[in-house]
Amino acid sequence: MGINRKFSWLVLILFIFVTFGSSHAIIEHINKNKLDKAFAEFKKGNLDKASIMYREIIEKNPKNFQAHFGLGVIYQAKKKYNLALKHFQACVSINPSFAPTYNNMGWIYFVTGQYDRAQLEYMNAIEKDPTYFLAYNNLGALFFARNQVDTAEFIFNKVLKMHPNNLMALNNMGLVYEFRGQYDKAEHKFGEVLSMDPDNATAQLNLARVYSSRGKWGSARRILEKLIKKRPDSPAIISALAYFHFRTGNMEKSKHYLEKILKMNPDYFSAREMLSYILMKEGKYKKAITHLEKLHKIAPYYFNVLYNLGFCYRESEKYEKAMFYYKKALKIRPDSLDTLNSLGLTYEAAGDYNLAFYYYNHALMKNPSNTDSLLSISRIYIYYGKLDEAEIYLDRILKNDIMNKAAIVEKSYIFWNRNKKNLAINMVKSVLNKDPDYLPALYAYGLFKFLKGQECEGLQILRKTINIDNKFLKEIKEYPRINEKLEKNIHN
Image (cartoon, rainbow, N blue to C red; front, side, top):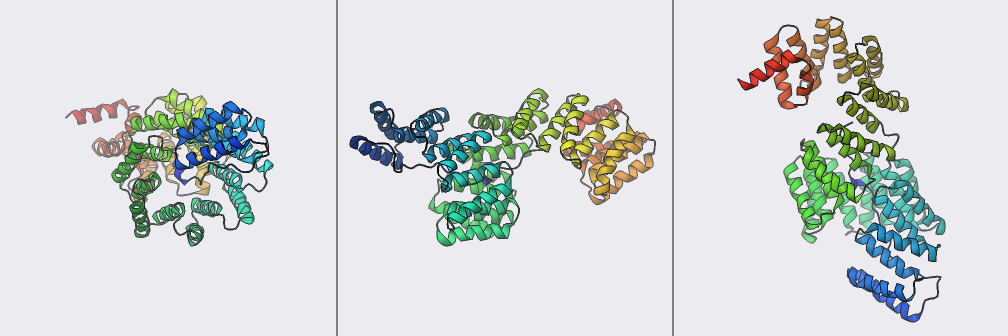
């Protein structure tokens, strides 16, 4: 129910398919010559010059689907997606059998988070050309982004059956294994790519990331240092360096590289997303929101951004906005237990316990053993003084996980309210003996000590808890006497 940690740079290799294959239309020689020249300018990176040439062709022959396609690709590269779609749709109306058009439309819908529409277009591309491996790769990437990893693996394997040495599919299979934590298999797949193409930068970056995940810092550093010498201004390599420092705990260095990327390219999505995550981890929610709102403008339907906006606004106590973004995230992934539970937490924080209970219970209906939902429902029952009902939910957790710290701490409140104060204190102490830094137990221990009459010791423990995480201040406000003494102590 915290921050969504799945970053877009771990999502698979996506491709804009830029090609002008054989046409079924009859094209005048002069137009064919212009098409070739326009495409040559595109390959050189002269997008404005190429777009002028494509528009000239369209003015003379509005039914030239290749010119519409070329202009659509240019707008796609410039992230002017509405204009790109306009020309791709014109291309479809002129030549509905040209598979790359559907693939590119699918790509646009994918990067803007419109997954259902993306899937439809990728399927259209495959229907038009069942051997079109780029559309298969992108379809696999879509399922991967939806956390349907088994389906993604099936599709990538299908590509490899058609093209056993397809570097994209091999890289993507490596990413599937990496996602599952099967690092040996991931290394093997990336190694296959490098055995065929030793200079493949994508595979090298993927391999460096796997080494970082396995704690092979020296191996990861060697790859990245070699790459950055060859391409010092490559955003992808700088991003990989940022991730390396992130994994080694050097957040300042990581932020330095991410900010460098964003100076070079303010629209570099994964760099801004990673920077927002670091800011969230540091509790700098206002700064994180600034980055996330920019990402939201680029990809208004991207689940991770919507979810993390909800998280930041909730932590900033702007509950209406948090609810708004969580609900948008829920429309994209209706079965997301994290989103349902986060909505419950938001309503609970806003004081609407009925709606909080509704969302917790909705999550529990989808997964009856979901620990977060069981804990949250028990907490609401405790709030209303329904201790027996609360205990039933906590026992469901402890039946499967007898040492669950959160459930033990919650159950200690039940025993405290039943006037079994020593038992409650002993339960919390048992948690702290195993994990002295578990803050909910530390808070409960300080609270119980104070309420039992050992005020000085209780205040000392509560102060320590607040110094580590000041979110417990809000809970202490429910106890005016404790709050007054803490404030008096701070002023003194």
